[in-house]
Image (cartoon, rainbow over all chains, first blue to last red; front, top):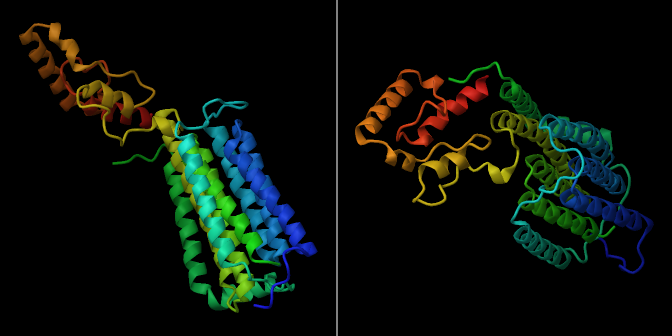
Length: 177
Length: 180
């Protein structure tokens, strides 16, 4: 929008965001490479927390708190329940990686290279002049309940259907045909 | 803030998620990698919402919707994984090959049964019946077929000794396991 300042003089916000991004990417790498299943879930907490900090730096406060509440509070706990209920090995497990790991590394590296080059090439001059208030709960709430009411209600019905489906799938006394 | 920084972080997170989905064997780890990819998308949505100064706040509202959908997805996915674990006693993606083709057309019966139902002993291959007399083999096959048709839910691995294809038997036997 405005003219972009130089990359060589980063602001404080950019430094904080880059540190949080490094934490997020590093813990995500540990999620996909660790040998212990429970540690993967805990590194996922670190990754989501760093991303929530990144949302805060981007002045999206409400999204940051929702991220902490739902991802860290609900989804990771659900994943830990899944790990425990499938009697996964606690401690080191040697066979968490599939045989096609080199192919996966090649595909992921190619994806990263293509995406990063395209993104850098496309948005080199784009700049966000950050100012607070754009992502507060008041702004977002009025936007949701003025412009996005129908998707919001449809999504609540979808969530209800998914939870009922989860209950039906996990009960053992409901027989199929 | 430059748009490049969050965009690059999100691209890297997405590729890490791709790697995790492709390289991991445990189903729960694959779900975690899917969550990483969804978070990369969320970061992009928030960034471009801030960049474009959207008056409807579409990016942030869509981020909230994606978070809700991810919660629903994890709930359903874990229910499916638990049902799978109850039936097959494994969540290992490399061993869940019930939908794959049999390895070779030469060994039809035993190979498909062994790959289809993991955790059970492989049914006896057809070639074991070659050393029985011919009439007895056909009679045994007829009785086993009859018992299988009359009581399909009681079909277990030791009922079938004749040249019945083991792929037929593993269906009711497996269903008996999961309802118990």
